[in-house]
Image (cartoon, rainbow, N blue to C red; front, side):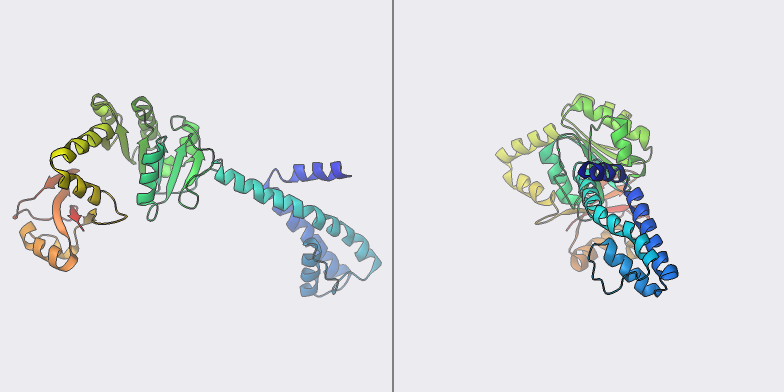
Length: 314
């Protein structure tokens, strides 16, 4: 008997949709039995069916005619069987989610292809509050950022896992695997699957910079060179290093922010808006981002255009 029940559970739990249809179909049949055959009201029919299927069994409303009672017996069995089936299904759905087995349905999200634990953690902590994130990584067995990211367990250089991350609908792709060759392959694959995404990739060898750019990376960050320059600067200009450390995190202290040019500033010269930015908005203008390039310390007579971006210290 137990073996039969387990086989039934196994056959049903393989599909959540099948479980739902099976449950709703059984409930509908029993409601119809009570309503048409036993002449119960619709409310009483629904109430009695729910009490039976959930095994609550109040008994205050129940079938009264012999035929209705006979036909109602399957509902009792279904109610008993449904509890373990639903429990197992819920557990399996949860496991699929935390183990990175579920496909992403996100859109305009950030896909992170990564294997560097520290860099991934820092990146996610910075943007998780205002960006949907899908992480594709093979270094984790369980989602280490539950509630913050959708996790896909898999290699960032295998197309199937990038497709599971719905990379075709992503707005940004961050490539940080800790290996230049893997970063190059992941960048090429990401660009193939999404021609319009903004791709940010890292390298450790300056020689690979041009390769990543030619494969479609919009921004390339040399992590080793950047770290080396900071370490060297700390020797003879520690205040600069402290400032960079301050402004490169949005979690505490000051921050560097890119913003659209407010409508009231469009068509005006840089010299006309700098005081207002400082006095009213507590911002210091550092650069104008125009045509995918930063104009650092812009001239006072530079006129702001609609598609410009302001890079400010806040």
